Length: 325
Picture (spheres, rainbow, N blue to C red):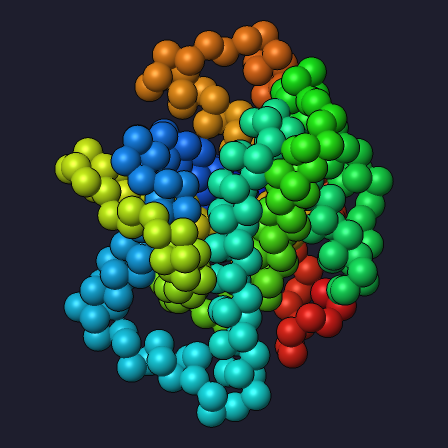
């Protein structure tokens, strides 16, 4: 009597796709906490100064960590100019840092020039820009399930602010800045997906943070803004932004791109403003409406649909940069 041969199924915890999803969940949770720390920081310094401190403190912490572990020499050789590939890596790092710095700068400026509803609504267009970029530059094709999931998630995220959306010619500059912030963050994810093939997550986070801080410093000096917090509470908030949001959050975000496409990651990040609202509810006792809960459910549904599609999985890496993935 023969027995049916049962092949062992891969463990959930060893499945690369689900490891990437868990890493992305942790990343979004950490990034969403940023709104709480930023609110504390902005009692003493401007949004631009808050972002600058977040980046330079991150750079300092990771620089000290690498120094203690003796990794500086190997790291510099990775991003040097000895070959054309390392040159590509260097410029990708520059782009990642610039995109990240420009995103936060434009986002913070848009909040002073237009309504919060407009800025939030327009900044949530990142998944569209990311997907269009993947299609136009890499020739990426998306299946119907992915497009449906993205559409549902976007409807849920945009539904939060659509009732408060206003059309005011005097606020068009702020609206445009929010759109450009979404475009800049799409560029960040776009380049990051290629860069993480060549450098580890800590290295990417350290150097991109250094470049972002250098990009923001001239803006602070030009505007004659106060740069550093003035109280221990402000410094604790800055350390929280650096350790939790930037180091842990961005490292997990980079790790998630090992198994997921940047298009899906952009969709998943639509949860960030909703989770931030929940955090404000817990810490600052801000009101959560039925619309908040409904939007959360709709975005989750869209994410689930997109995750079930083949387009959510990252394509095999292609050498040489921005080739068709």
